[in-house]
Image 1 (cartoon, rainbow, N blue to C red):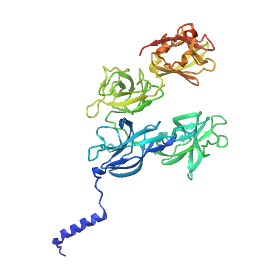
Image 2 (tube, helix red, strand yellow; image 1 turned 180 degrees about the vertical axis):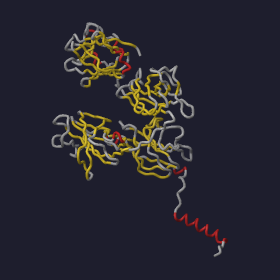
Image 3 (spheres, rainbow, N blue to C red; image 1 turned 60 degrees about the vertical axis):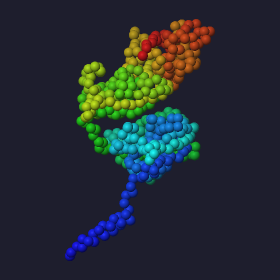
Image 4 (spheres, rainbow, N blue to C red; image 1 turned 30 degrees about the vertical axis):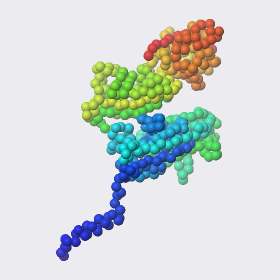
Length: 524
């Protein structure tokens, strides 16, 4: 058979037209068509961490990123970002916020390009998308949040568990109006079936806590969490003994979730050192920083520095790391990371050094494959009222207050016992929390030089109304700020109320005056 090559141009033309009719991939959107639209949204209390994007059009892979409003423009700090979205049109997808929204506010959604990372990390290599006029592609919208949270609620997100921890479930948030339990159930026909673990919780709100299970869960298994009231002790038995908590509509307070078991987690890179540390809010202690992950090629130290890494100020704290991968590393600081209700930019650094204690002059930076020091910038926010240190005390025989624990241990030297007498040294302008394990029999009081009670676990003492001290009692614990009104004779109390000064000079038990000790001060 012979071939008529003169017919080839015609055949190619027909093939090209046929391909067009059958449908080729659409070209990337024109710059004039790039857009993002987010409608105003009313969020229920348990939806405050999710924003829905109505539609978005982007001409390359990227992200929709949320920002707070700053005088009519997006703020510089992102509040959350979408999963990676492909080039093209997208409708009705959700963005998880880093933290739940607390107040009604204006927000912005801004499109950003990806740089092959696959997740948004807020770098110059992931720039905002711009339209044909060079303007950022964005949209502002109003968010209204439910003011009064429900009295009872339970939130458990889908979670991935390592194979060796497949019997531990993390509860994101539980709120209950009396003492009770979070109970985990397996599923049968779309409903909770047999209970496989529980955790007792007191009345109130609880966040990010674990529930131990009776067995390992299966990969892809659906589980349920339910709230139950406690009426017969702190061990869960069954629904008859411990009734199910119901909401205002009479429905059980419950949440279902899916568990993924990571049977073969990826091996961390072994040949390059790195630090992984997230921005963090300090609401427990303002002097402990959590480093998510460190990979050290040799034994060394993780240090936390004042200022950003480009400036890298004084060392605020350090912790040793062994060669290899270290996760969830706490670094204790020698001062609060930031002032109360304030934020600070800090730097985490990795050093190579096998000495027993860290000496910046003798240690060398760990270096990455490019020969650059291993450094990581991060930001901390210190919530108002967060203590710098927590001291736990008890009583002993013969009568004396005894020191049980100091958190962080950096400040143990400030609380030493001499001849069975505990001396307390406070840093001026810091906030403290004292946990008195024997409050019922020996409530603690702070005294002036005339042994008059200025602050007390036993009654409303004079200094407790002073705003700068910010006295707060939480069951057996109490918190206070060592302001000038605490440590200096400033005259904030009416002279007729006291014979002596209004500066704290000592402490004792309100019920046993011979349980006493001195109070002293030092500067940061």
